[in-house]
Amino acid sequence: MTAFVIAAALVALLALGFVLRPLWREGRATGAALMVSFGAVASLVYVLVGTPRALDATQLTEPRTLDAAVAQLEQRLRDDPDQVEGWRLLGRALSTQGRAAEARDAFGKAAALAPEDADVLSEAAEARALAAADRNFDASAVALLRQALARQPMHQRARWFLGIAQRQARQPAEAARTWEPLLAIVDSQTAVGLREQINLARAEAGQEPLPGAAPAAATGGLRVTIALDPSLPPPAGATLFVIARQAGGPPMPVAVEKIAAPKFPLEVVLDDSDSPMPTMRLSALKQVEVIARLSSTGDATPRPGDPESRALPVSLPAKAPVALTIDHARD
Image 1 (cartoon, helix red, strand yellow):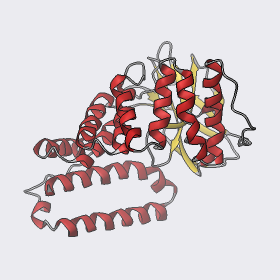
Image 2 (tube, helix red, strand yellow; image 1 turned 30 degrees about the horizontal axis):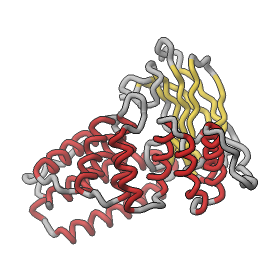
Image 3 (cartoon, helix red, strand yellow; image 1 turned 60 degrees about the horizontal axis):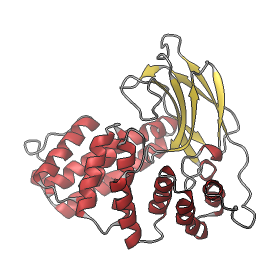
Image 4 (cartoon, one colour; image 1 turned 120 degrees about the vertical axis):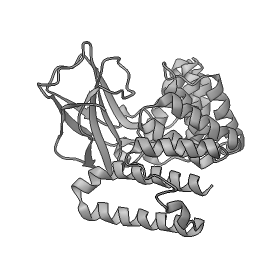
């Protein structure tokens, strides 16, 4: 158990390092303060566990990279597989690395250990969809979502994902009914996009839109200019993805535009209409990371070798355009 806690802490701290790099470049004081805070948390874990022997170099090889830390955590979980949080942490780390199928399996193990935890069940269902070639929620994922809602009927992510699954299955009336209760609990900004999706589903089902006016939508957007380094020709038939995601948050975008056969340089505007999830709107955030990536497969999932830009932190609202240059191949 001790070894598992330490390996998990190492993964978390290494992942934090990758997240904090943009903050460190932008503001040394902010980055230092956050590292001190997490150092205090790590110290607290050490005090609670109380294992000076486990920190001995002969007992644990310090990983130098996120890959090494993930490998250590995987080994600890093989030794002690009944750790729900360990499987969740492993799933998130594998998702960050683009290892969707392995992340699906890790979240699946967490769900098997915590069948009454709606958060864990929703994560496992989402991971199954992200690992699928068509990004659809399969029957097992839908069963996990229904299991989550049986335990927590107003779980926002479970309801949202189940509605998506129902629309994928060409059940728009059911999707609208699944989503409508969320309007009573989400904030007014989120309700704008959610109402739009509900009315689209109702229209597909031949139903009238919801009565009453929708709240006013946020105006403006985030202008992004994208250039391509001449030394990095795009793959044949490439598709461009311009993505805004939560700074320091999950890799899932809060806004994304997809452009087939792009001609560089070009400019796009990201706004709330580009959000794949109405429960997370671009206009509701104070800071995002913006990245541009070329895909030879037309798939938004990042793959090694994809030409991409550096992730650029941006404070919102941004008055000036954000300039990105696709200048390296993804590791």
